[in-house]
Length: 311
Image (cartoon, rainbow, N blue to C red; front, top):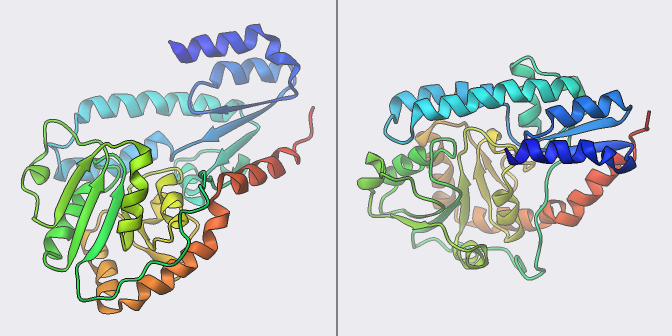
């Protein structure tokens, strides 16, 4: 495989005289084992919650929405990565996580949480994304945007169910790859939901500007960078703890429990009942957004790397 070829190439190159090696994703077990033999420090980036934790979260949802995905295939994939992750954890000196949610998930499956370091991500800013807070005057439908592949892990069924409860009050736009064949919920959409499908990233900015609120009720993430993008445009967030965000509940948005259409409806209703919340939370999102830049992420990462002492 490509991953194995990359590992062998790194080892053959004798690690280019490095004192430490940092690897992202799940192609690091063999490299880490060889690196440890040669006295290098090993750093793994855990980009999402552990596979076995995600699998457990999805089991209940699969039973309710069984026509969304090939469940047997998903189980095989997640089980394979579970075995791979344990090998990587065992041979890593440090495990970098994008959020405390990932650390908590590792702890719950018995993983080495004592090796973890939380370093939130960042995204490129163009400089003209969020120049002023969003304003929702009331008297029209609340505009709700979601960006991400439509699927169970992203909580899409709960968005559709909430949209059905809020017909006449909210309009929902969902951007992201659409599963085929269409699950039942997507074949029978309420009239206030629009599926845009996958679009080039250069087009997404206009949707962030259109929206009043950004919604992502994920079941499992690492730290969803689309939320960083939404912050950069000054959008209040409605997210689960599982999205791995660093906002404060009630300040830059609302943090809701996963797997609940009712929680989504309650959060969005707060904006409908108190339209000024959009402007207030948007201003706070813009104030927080410098922490979500690629430059801020680079600084956080380099600060950590500079603390590592070579063997």
